[in-house]
Image (cartoon, rainbow over all chains, first blue to last red; front, side, top):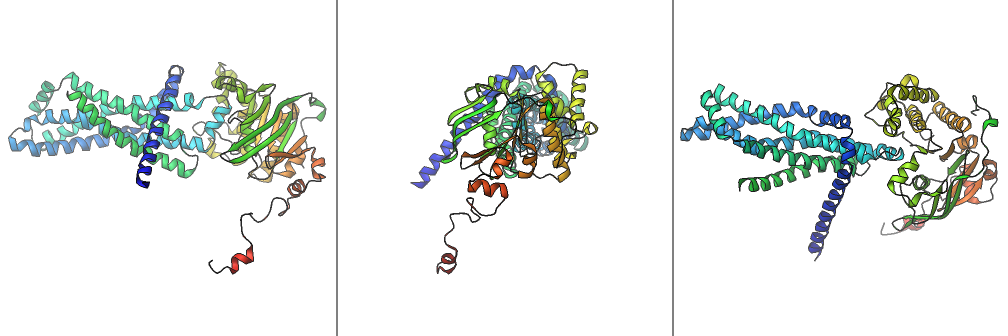
Length: 256
Length: 282
């Protein structure tokens, strides 16, 4: 009986949380036109979330690409099809690994920064001070950070994919001796614009989700050191789970 | 004792009416009643102190006056308008007429001192940069921190942060300033500076000031009128001298800083000391 009650409580908590996030999103959307009218604030946040995440994205991109090249070569050489490595790697990176890994890295680097920054602003009364100065913190703090993150993630994903393909090439062509011409030409022949669009759509969705989760967690953090810490952890955990879940759903829909 | 040095009492505006009126306000958090029938008025152009033991809801009162929270019942009138009935848009419009100084300054940490003071001007006006610069420098000069314009909030001491916050609160020339525990955690020099500034703002500009604090000595220098809140109500009000001679035990205890009295030294739910010590099942 108590287990049933616990389950019911958890379910209720989940529904309340989803409702609360939705309300928060609607509040942000209501402020969107006024926020877009101040592009400088958004550009600042694209710099904070995007530009400052570039190094980690690029380093991880090279290594993810390198390992895809290594493992891909290992499998394909059994069938004598190492020339098709470029095609396989491009599909894997464009449609799955690129958007997903970038989103996970983004949640770890930019998402935590957003959540802890906003949470600390709440804990140190900065958000209340803004309200007292008749400035809506949703408009001034939440929306620009949300937009900055949502715009940054697709850009980062594209950069990640580009660098990762270079990483594949580095291992496959430079190190393992796959023919460069067939590597690139097969990739160009097989990959269509739709495949690129699929990846782009995914990373746009992840951008919205990860930024929303980070901003929401920070904004609603309990205003103590522990509360901000918990909000930061929740940002990473929830983002990771949601990204992987939604990725599967999007893949299933896109493959139809 | 800090004396007003740049202003004279003759320049003060007469207290013609009340800027804030609180009428029969009830407010509770969960089952705990914070205020039960609070009545209080803040005269225009004067410094009013709101005192009380810790946990009596002084900060809650400030949040009620500024509309951050709404009372369960009762009226909170700011210049005749009931703050608790306003929409968010109207409330924000009304807040342009108020300024609040937070205990920790609450400066925006992603901006330097100059931009912090410029913040409300940039948000609410279309003034050219040149004019904003002049206003900001004037406000910083008033709090003695023109030289700190390029510092960031983490580089400031507690007292400096509060002075910058005061300059920021002054940027839009509000009618009323609320100081939430402005003296807590300051060294005597910084405290003297804040006392001087609060007086200056009031004497020179006629700003209605509410100082929420429990620093009796500083309030004795500053306040024209004081309220002592305890148990959800105003237990005493008047000038400082009147409060010092008040017959009520709680007022006597608070004003003289006595360790025991109506607010007991020992937290009440504890059982009898000896009974507890001698109990077998301890």
